[in-house]
Length: 534
Image (cartoon, rainbow, N blue to C red; front, side, top):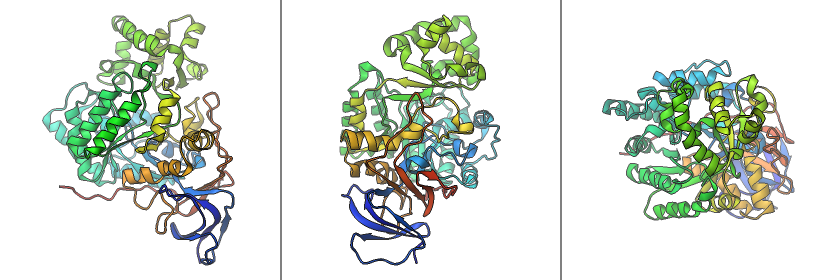
């Protein structure tokens, strides 16, 4: 007898093949049998879910997530599971919560202090064990962050590592890979990753490649020099012989709109030469990051305390004024940067307002508002930046080499993860693709959209037996109404769950039923099996 039978649904199996009507039989945590419509009954099941009129698809794999600490703070955070995500890939943009050694331990603990949590691990393996003990709704796969490794060895200094330090960084990368990491990530606009030259990145990416890992990069520039930055990522892939994933690919700033057509062509040309490069994308024209990204990298040399000290220096502040007002005010527009989240109560009323609006209310320049906020909040200010165009989003979404990723951590409508006015992608990424870009605009067909959310990221990472509805695959499944599925989260009201998703099944267990969580938390940490490629 089977444990679960999903009967009569329209199966989109994740491979890109045309949909078909059929039944899915589940035994334990795996798919045991697929029966086409009108086939002979395959046996009895303890439970039957009737899926007529609905899509049965593999659970979505969020290839670019930031739930590193979310699922320790609140393992029951619902924003991902309720949009059909069954696996999240964390450790992106150069920041992972392990290895928590050296100066990196201090930085990680400072990050965890806002939730009153203690860092109870040192190695990457110990961190993964801590995630397992949290029993999250979803499966977790992790990358190791270059910024974390660099901080552990070099600290937050703006300099190249000495040869012995680079060797230690390579050792930490290898240890993380042996502990189950799926690759190395970089965040090359953020300190300290932005202090690394290309040679350093090649050396560490080559270590990840030896263990079958990928190199996932928030590239060095997503604006004026986006083509140069994509070229660097391709070069790293070529020299390190590593698969490259360009994270949340975009061209930000109106003068750069349209450049993604060239960067996508660059990736395609590199692939024709044997360089394994691909990208992921989220379905919005706004990004989200820290407000301190407006600062040049040298301001952060030495860490947050040094950054604050410099910003309080009147001479340095005036030195920065012209540069930032030109870059942010003239090139981007202060009204395009919205405060999403702060930590102090005194600034909470600013959430949801743009910098130009706040400046008008306070009688200050937008530059002074931004710098004062960074000082007040000790650089912990999240912003939403409106800088992309719909044509570029569609171009990346529809390209064969792209996958879908949220670039967001798990959130909830109550508790510690309900704070602020975050980017709606935390709640709506995957339903938005299916509602807007499949059903309404026809940018993607249903089968290809599902492939980009399931088997494509699984293949990219080497997640075996995930991302497909096939016999022997793990039973991660989402059941939704293709006519009703809709993202309900907006920039004005971001803490809203999507509609149209009826069931989410993780490792054979029903985690969402009739659109609501069941309390079952069947997620597990997926550790990469490795081999040494010499």
